[in-house]
Length: 367
Ligand code: MRU
Image 1 (tube, rainbow, N blue to C red):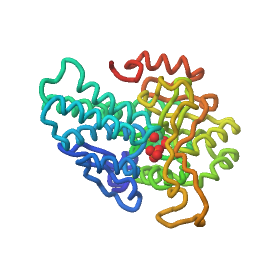
Image 2: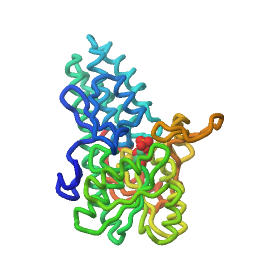
Image 3: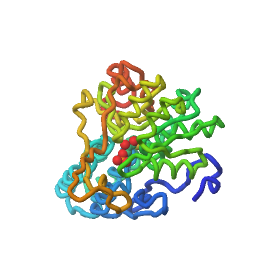
């Protein structure tokens, strides 16, 4: 599928994830850009494997996927009584919800789906419980798509004077159930006919920028250039970037933001050059229970991801490797947080609290 197949700036119609009726179909992101392959997820083991290998990834997409994975796991277990169903759901809550510990959308979506289905009035049989699980899981994805569209609309206004936009990792349609967060603003600019060029840092070790951001933007016919992670700061300093726009995996109550490792250095470079550094994220990525960034759990991944590229070992035998998947950018370096509930500005404590209060309750949902 190419950009020309879908008419220029409209993203390819192959969805990142979709409910088929009895399973979840996802794009296998480990195979991009070489191949647009799909995975049919119809058991918990396949769902866990997909999340752990990053075949599905990006905090909002993990939320939408995790919610549907609860349904898949429920169907697989086929509980014969409500008591058995409750115990299956508690097992799935832990197993699926903990798969990617920094991405709060996953934990939030799994809890929301299970808690709503188990809520009052209590389901009187397992079939009704299963219907409720599916309805709630589908609502998580649909609401994420709406949030992405609103983030795009608001982000376009924020980036009105920016043409050259730097981003890190992939916060596009591959990372959400909609058109993305950081890249939603790019799609909105392009759709409005505004000039836009994206500089995508490659994002070692798993190369989400080089592989995924570059794939989805070229697929949509948008001008994108990949730069080595270590090149972005000097390009920013040289005036080649008008603004930096990235996504988030978890935003603390004070605005400190965890995102893909390497984000922090982009923020430092933007601050030094005096350009805007923006986070784009749905309110479901805000975790008001975490007061500040040092309390955000950072996922530590297999050192082999650092040792190797494309299955080829780079480092000498005997060398160690450390592989934190995320870092935390302090709120003081963030110009604004673009959410589906508005563009939040410092001081973030009050603006985040107001956004959550004005929308859908303390965790960004209807309680
Ligand atoms: O490890 P990943 O690929 O799941 O990390 C993804 C990111 O860091 C994204 O920037 C973040 O989840 C926001 S996606 C809209």
